[in-house]
Length: 268
Image (cartoon, rainbow, N blue to C red; front, side, top):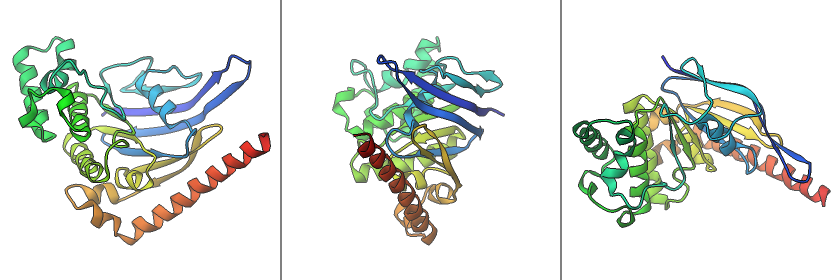
């Protein structure tokens, strides 16, 4: 069973003027296979930095990340990334984008075709295989990005504000798709978001981070992701506990934002 361990993780950025920014300090998390965790917090709390370190794009200045019993030291196909915007190859059509990872691994064409056919059906794009990326809406492009990520069969999927640029209706549909894929694939997922409601809907575990330095402020275990699989997410939001947790977390983050603004005014 794959397990992701983040142990005593710290990240410090040294600046040209001799000062530094402590982006993360002593982050400790363990994710078991198949867990879905959302990460929330005010701007500047290090959410994306944390995700980039887990992805292997950044090397931490302290601590370790262990996946499947070995240290993470750089990017690897065992960890897939879905960005805020699809980051798709615009000179390739939809199928070619999805098949890119398997092609780089030398997967035979027939097997690549089978993988892309299956995944494009899963994300509802089976009729758009030969379309150019620029012909697709933002929501459809994110579906392609999800399929491309899954085509590499990663153990862990990392999602950095993947739905942030979408309109409200498309975003709701994509939230349902994320839950569907989580349940059907059994993948471990870490999702960064600025939306409290989205974090509640898409996190069976929800981590709230505090800034300066970035650290874990509070963690929740929640029932809403499980409730939302195959269900009307608007009905899930009507559950009394959902509203209570939303108000609690909004107040928590607002207090952090006020503290940050207060520091800025004092420094000025």
